[in-house]
Length: 88
Length: 267
Image 1 (cartoon, rainbow over the protein chains, first blue to last red):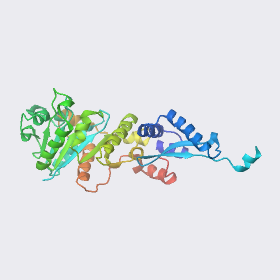
Image 2: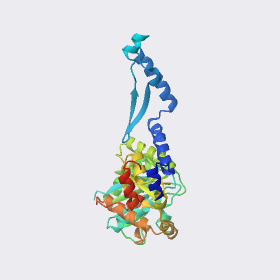
Image 3: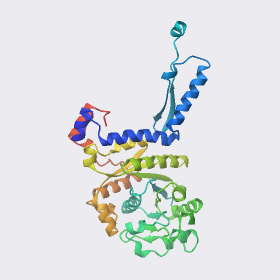
Image 4: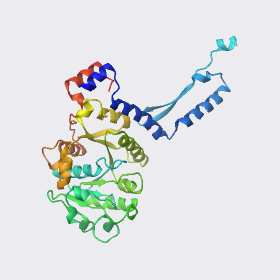
């Protein structure tokens, strides 16, 4: 009953907290990629891509996504629009 | 006879590997199969006391591997079920007394004489674990709904897949309905989503487990125990039967169904 009320009211239960914490922990356990390495990888990717196209450096996102037990590296790299480029 | 070798493992200690090994073995024997429970936890043996056979040990696993006795001599027959046997671990040796290739050879021999070999693995991810899974046809992972146990289960699942033993099936142990109900315990769906493996069984928290251990009688042979029922169901699923999962989580109740209806993803 309590979980029912918590669910419809959107309240955070300790089981939900456990699940969310585990989701993050397992991603890093499985990939052996500490958060710090993700950061430097992101910067290196930006450097390589920037040689060919201007990107919105601040908005680049590098995430790990999972499907079943398979992990994927997902990069979202917004390209600077030519309009803004011209405006500079 | 071409028997099947099944290893139970968990990574973390104290989640119920030995209890589950004894009970799955007893359940399969009760269903008429010839079963050997093998304790691979060398140096910390316990399967003997859980099965109530500690006073009958003459030879152990290391004696077999080192050729001091024949395989049959180390197989202790259960008091209740004549088709259930135990091969105990050695208590005064350590994991290095046996190698993975010794275990593969032993499992090959056992496959010839029984239907099922159920191996109790030691905790951890080192030599003892590698020994325990070396000869296995299937590996089962058991965990509790605790963050530390789930995390270690995930690690061990990764290692089992890396050893090319296929994707292990999961037993979720010690579920407390009331705690799941009030949102203070991960439920089976949560754990399955996190670990992304197939479920073999959900075992409720049950005082009869401790009482059975006190007496040396597996609860699978106790008709009144809920956990015993869960282990009997696991035995039948291992035999390929489709047995519905026991309703333990709050989702079986009216409010569970209602909340799922209102908020299908909010679990």
